[in-house]
Length: 136
Image (cartoon, rainbow, N blue to C red):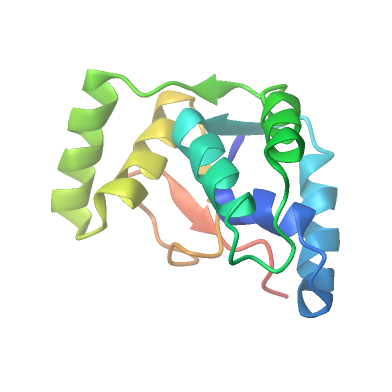
């Protein structure tokens, strides 16, 4: 199983011409069945996709429907234990809390790979490896 970071979901809905190759790649990834998400990722997607400063902003209904559709993948909920693990990962690896939460959600779901453009490609966080799917 592979864990999908928010940027993959955002590229999948992008209509910005410069992001077209990433949009295609993101949609190809999302056609897979070996993916996982977290509530945090779905929240971030909704907030960023509906941001009024976004040139291709989605409506509430569009973003809400997509969140429902993305929930076809296993979704890790945020628990107190997850929060403590994320804080520990943040401290150990010098990440933001939010990035630590991504790593720990992936770990909780049994994912060995996090697909992300934002985290360091090739970085191993104690058994959870980050891969940037947009690198050639």
